Every structure is written in C-alpha cells, then in structure tokens.
Length: 160
Image 1: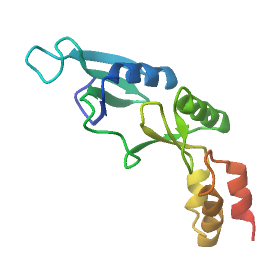
Image 2: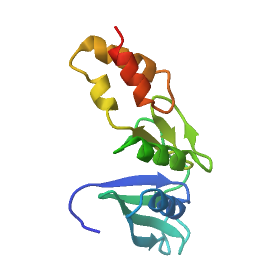
Image 3: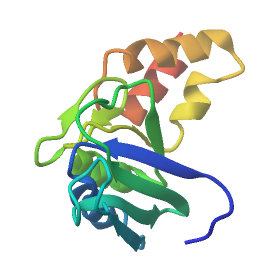
Image 4: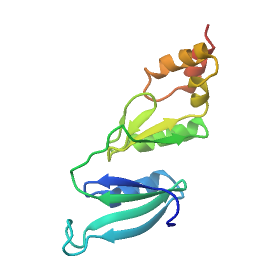
C-alpha cells in the first residue's frame, strides 16, 4: 500500500480482520495489506490484531481494533456507484446478507454496522435534474424506497 493520498480508518471492536476479509470478498479485486498486532505494554492484548490494511476499488482502508468505545453511525457512509442494475443487485444482496440490513433510500448497513449507499446508474441525474419539478417527482418516491427502483423513479420524474 502507498503512503500517499487518503486512508479511511474504520474503528472496530475486535473484528477488523473479519471485516477486511468480508469487504475483500464483496468488492472483487481488492488486496489485503499489513496486519499489525498489539505489542506488549499497549492498550490491547499483546499479539492480538490491532490494525488491518486493505484496499478496495482503489481506496485504502485500515481497520483498527480500538474497542467498544465508538460505534458506526449513518453520519458516515460509502457510496457504491453501480454500472448497471445487476451490479446494484449484487452489492445490495452482498452487503445485507449475514446480519446486514436494508435501511432507506438505497442505504444499507452491513453486518459490522458500516453504512453504504447502493446507487444504480441514473439515480443521481434524476434527483439532481435541472428541472426542479422533475427532480422533486423523482425524489418523492425515492424517500419511500429501501432498494432503489430506477424505472419507478424515471416514471415518477416523467409524470406530469
């Protein structure tokens, strides 16, 4: 992994290595980097995993086993901009399985509590349409959906 650019640090309560393995299985083509262990005299138990570096979709991450003090919230989420509906379905299913949950408006929480926005192609253009009426008509049904239905959003945007 490089030392340039940004690295997103995700704070876990003991399952950083499992989370990295999970993300690498969901986002194909990623890589696992260094695994750091707590040394003697540190806040963690000596020899236990402290950090796990990994890269997915060109983004560097480090999972930190920092303890139970902090939890993930929806204040931070990752957008997954999908190339087609099939890719959106894949990420939706992968991120909600094994304890993940559907939230609203295209958002899911994975089994570790990390929030993701699964965005099919065309959604951003619809809700940011230069015609405010069209944007509002697309946004209204989006607010009631869990998994985004682009065809439905288009129908709503085109209705007059």
